[in-house]
Length: 307
Image (tube, one colour):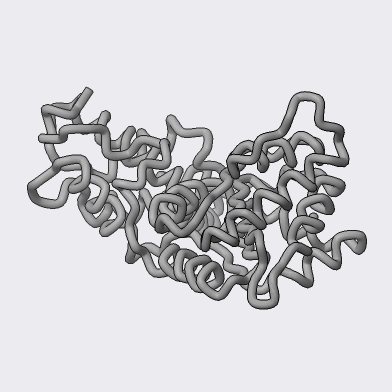
């Protein structure tokens, strides 16, 4: 690969949620602060929504890594479970012992006892559910019932839901209105603006060991932004492929042409199809129209037009 060529110690644009590459961009920092403030205030439900690839999982990992020893967390990365299955997963994450012979109705009580024990120890229990749009309606109702547990001052279990926009549609169902009313803090992650793309890419390069001048020309940065729509996952893919293209040509600066090749090779950059050739549709069609009109005028002048 291009690691040694560009002076990197690791790949800068992988898709794994490595918190070493986390950057405090304004929108992501607002989301992080929203969750932090809500947890400090003892709020029950917190919701973070964002499109695919906008950095929800990385934000989730950053949150989990930053919580102090006074917090006990239960992290559920794949919540497409039955109500009982999710309850068992929560119990295991919280360190509750569920006997093999325990019946279905006993699991919530075991979780309750564990939450009370943690509260007596001065601990705060936090349930973090990623990809929450995949939770079944019945399972969400079971989670809501767990938030009924509270002391006079705070909830025994705080819940952070992170999901795609489908989560909002799920929570808008009339049968889930009680749960929706309990969401006291929420935030929507947005794609990066054009002005943030250069900072984002340079941060990841620096975190991967790069120490040199800008690798991407301004034209390359603009095209990466257009081709990705500002979605961090697509930014990573296009930047990685652009570096590969530059490396293959034996050059040390990523130009527009390298990004064009990356976009052509990335199906995920849809619906930004043909973005690498946007100038052709912007300029070529008007020019073609002018040429056609000029030709028409010439033909008409000399009487060459067919009748």
